[in-house]
Length: 208
Ligand SMILES: [Zn+2]
Ligand SMILES: [Zn+2]
Image (cartoon, rainbow, N blue to C red; front, side):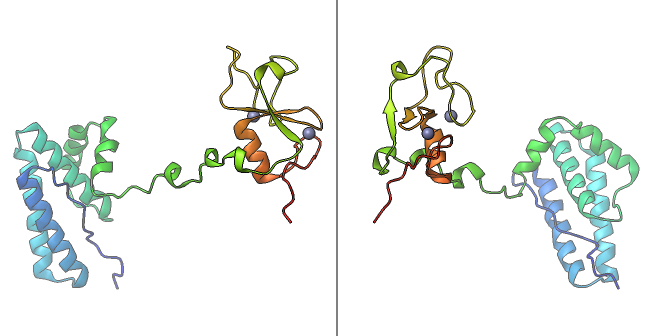
């Protein structure tokens, strides 16, 4: 009947206090056994383990170990649909963890694998070497070549020059219509369109 296991294993933290760690291991061991077989004797043992965790938490004087207990209790409670610990224990647990901003941080360290960083896997557009791209109808210019210092990029992402008259990277200009591009904006233009955003002049030399 019960298809969803009542008990789920939790990820103990290697940095936890030794006695907390030991109880966590005990809990995990029983949880995995109970997942395979809902046995009355094992269930009783689990009740004992849960009680040991409760008592351990109640009597713990050391601040660090108290926090470790509180985390253990939180992890078990989160994974157990029916609720495991009495209300007063849960209240103490919340008090101990204090809902402080570092709670989430500590949870991250706890056995949960983080998804691979997006930025590291993303293709970095800046690696395109414009000097290696056969281009026509577009030329590299200097800030002095701009019609006015406030000239804007074809992408509408702002002026080419910053408030100090400097620019990040090269400046490119369409030979056909005179519109200008930030270096990276030209890269985007080449990748997405291959021709001028404004006048459609071809920028990429046709390969034979
Ligand atoms: Zn731009
Ligand atoms: Zn153009």
